[in-house]
Amino acid sequence: TNGRRRWREACDLLCCSFGLVPNLELPRLLGCTVENGIVVVDHLQQTSIAKVYCAGEPTGVGGELAALVEGEIAGLAATGNHAAASAASLQRARDEWRGFSARLAHAFAPRDELRALVEDDTIICRCEDVRRDRLDPSWTVRQAKLYTRIGMGPCQGAVCGAACQFLFGWDAGVVRPPFGAPTVGAWTETEEEHV
Image (cartoon, rainbow, N blue to C red; front, side, top):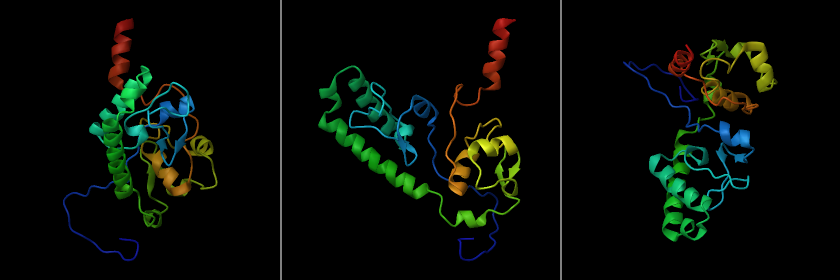
């Protein structure tokens, strides 16, 4: 379906993209300003928190080269070398990558008609097998977690969190350490060290 009509296509494999979502856990925990899904930074990559710099995906998904340019600016600024961080060549490169990032965000943004495709039996949280009919859009993220366990599985909301924000306008809720879900391998290594 394209939001206007439905049809069937024979295929062997279907791949879908539902947006590019940066990990904002640490910046949010630190209290950095986040707008439109990215951390707000100035020309030196400084966030709204003094002496906290941010580079890479949290400032806009743009790829490795974008992150390297932003990281160089942030590193120079963090060491007090503001003149080098403000160099026209670095600023120009960063601005070009920001333009690329904005184009990526636009190209991969979920289209509004996707909301109409969600049916009662559509799985919203695959980790906890939460379907759309178990969710009330008037809830907060906390209520949804308490009532359905959505966002509490192994991915810790990395997948369903963005879906819920898109579908219901829910924000990410409270961020607490540890950041991200620990891997079984990391847990096993830690346990072996203590044996």
